[in-house]
Length: 226
Image 1 (cartoon, rainbow, N blue to C red):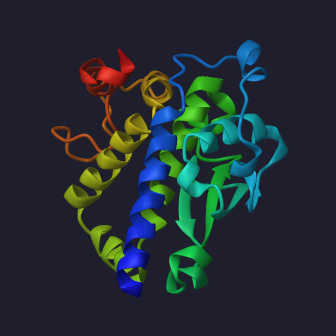
Image 2: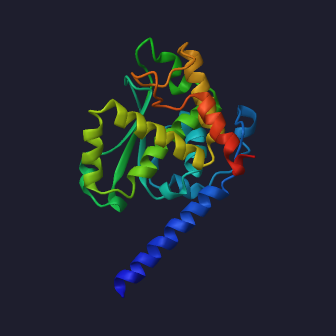
Image 3: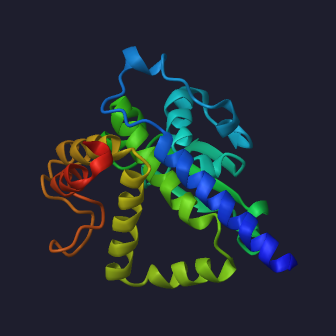
């Protein structure tokens, strides 16, 4: 009986969280003029350490992931090769999901090649899109147990597995109503890197990160975006 009650409570939480995601309104374009008028839920910033220079865009992106409201996340600005990356802290991998902590790194300096796509060099709309990508990773990680992360580490050895992993991460962003922001990021990355059909993978036949036309096609086919 106790097990059934716990299962029922878990299902209710999942359904409630899902309804919150769906209720967050779709915004086609965030700009410096409109961003100050956008209301975010202050509870979404609980247990978060957010750098001042990216406070607005991070809080907007977080508001589309209510399942992460109480999750401990530290955003750190530092010199790193990857413009953005997200992972759980090493120790917390072995903790139960409710006790886990995460780090999202925002690069302040990288190689000359990737410098044009640093967060600070993107539009506000694209910034929200790429932060949404990292939060989408955490959304998947949050309910998982230690064995998931061991499996994920093994996937790093397979280009095909990682292509699918990142592609599905982009799909979850669209499901969280940040499709237009993902589209802005996808367009700007390819323009800034002068790679119109860059998919982020070694195999040109696969997309690790969705190309703009792929994102647009999914948006066009979605009833909630139209």
